[in-house]
Image (cartoon, rainbow, N blue to C red; front, side, top):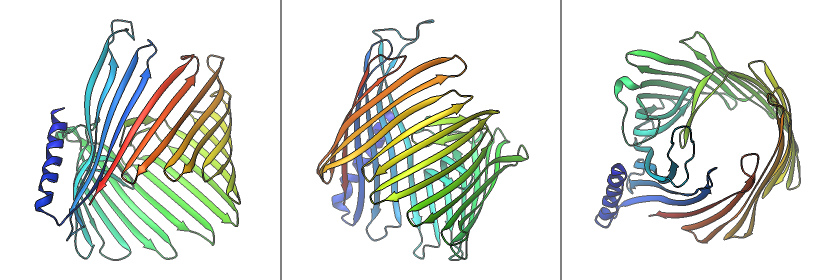
Length: 409
């Protein structure tokens, strides 16, 4: 909480100096959310979230700017008592603040060299994650781009603290070269060190572009230098002809940890996956069909997805078979603009799935409905009700209220 108050004090100081420094440009937004829900112990809990996004730069030099995004939350939690997972009547509200990015960026007048220091999202080839450090980018020629990063891994909880050097220092490099005919080649390197030992070391390469007229391709290959075997590969080919599009894709992935920089860190198992899809554009409607084959530890599954959509909505049918069990379902997602300032949101899904290992057949139904109301350009109000029913909840009703305020100069 004290880190959040220091952050607010810094923002307030910036704003207080604006009248004295009229040649300053700033923009940002405030996102306030209230979430009401009930846990399996039938306790009503309320979560409060406050997000802040901010960017400030001198008007005379927009290539020198400070930007940041953080979230402050007050969440309802439960105490554990022995073997009792949920204990009624013991609401505990925790205060939590998270800093997702905060960095200073400077680009030279010729835009050949730029520096970015602070907490930032870095997704350049195999360099993947939220990192604290310095990114240096350069363009020696119009076709060649070089990037270098050195610093620390961000804390897993994304709080305001820094890891110690021995807890996770990182080093990475990225090279991209623009080939003829809209083709591009990249080469990247990334390593993580802990306690004076290299624990993660990847080398990656990619080729993307246009092979023939209307043929688009993507090819990625990541090699694990520590295990001396491939870490992941993806090959994708797409073809567009009139109202038709065709695509095929193959993925193979070794176990690794992935980051969603905003909310979570998660790990995945090794898998092989093949996808094929076809779509047809009929006036404002698009009809599509997709087949997905997945192999996880020799457990194979087949998924068939059919969709029809237009600019304001999508309806899909799903059929899944294989070792993971059978799953038959349907879903729909609609965002319909009733007026320029009022949008209606509706979502519904129904699934009947079988858990192959326990031979249990289960129905799962979910609905949500809400509105997005924007009476002014700088203000947006959103309200949503969510209803679900499955084997855990006979009737689960949740509510979400969000206020978005946009500002700038």
